[in-house]
Length: 396
Ligand SMILES: *Cc1c(COP(=O)(O)O)cnc(C)c1O
Image 1 (tube, rainbow, N blue to C red):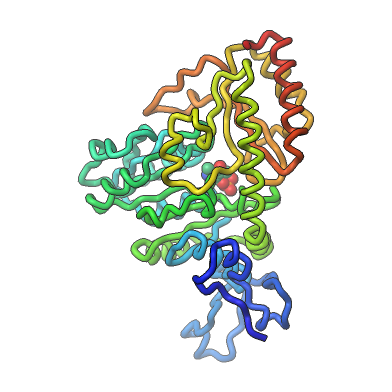
Image 2 (tube, rainbow, N blue to C red):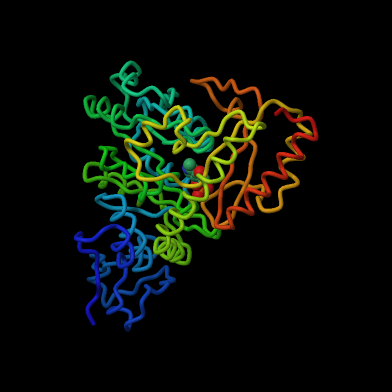
């Protein structure tokens, strides 16, 4: 039996089917097995002393983890990928690999809040100076660069407020000053944005979200280019990070259907967003693929698609109206995370975390994740919700 491997000749939806699979080594079974293991046995003392083994120890990986790593490396176009126990730990590995005491870190004000907490709470303790910048800064980031600036961290779009960053403009400045760039690419998935093609050094994912796709894993990935890969691999090793075999296996399974899920969710998300845009209760829809979004042109220039996470800003209204809107929804779960098959809703207030920018919406902000349910049902549920909002005194 001959294994079918990605050849680089085909389009990504074809390559994603074969990457990280080798049936000839698994008695013909299509999928890689789950290798559960800590100890790896060596044939004799000499080979143990030299660690002459493809997989020296459970923490360093197995054919199961290789499968997902190879998939992410292919999709992101990197030199290599490491798996971590969560998306946040992927961010922590990437930052620790690239920063040392005395360095200056530029962090987008729109980043995932726990990224901020990690930097303020831990990196600062290790002597890193953290400075937040406006996600819309573009080439203006040059004004913030200091001799000791070592890393610029991006997240585009921000996963609550959906500012799209001018990645090429920021990369140009970073390259000129030999600054490493790291991006949180969770929203776009590598199918809709490939940061390394734009010159970003490191792309991280909360594979917990769309890659896993079923709300059943905590998993992170760090994919690096040639320049940063040795340091990423070394730091990952030193920190003792790893993902368990069952979780890694679910991650590689998620990859097989990632394209069909995100395309269907893109269409559904846009349909719901357009419907919301026409509602009088809604002041603003923050979805980069809508023509009305302030950063639509940037999104259109750099992205190949949009996933199904976006936010709305309602007209001003009392807290009871927001509660009536959200608590009565039948199809949207209230909870953190996203990227699974099910729809979710969550109010948020950026004022709680922002320092470099202001948030001046008058009404409450609500983030929606559109799942794989029937879109008409999802819209009907929101329609009933907005009726409750209005009846309870919400603005329209
Ligand atoms: C959820 C999330 C993370 C963290 O992922 P976990 O697996 O929950 O640790 C990082 N970045 C973004 C944008 C996220 O939404």
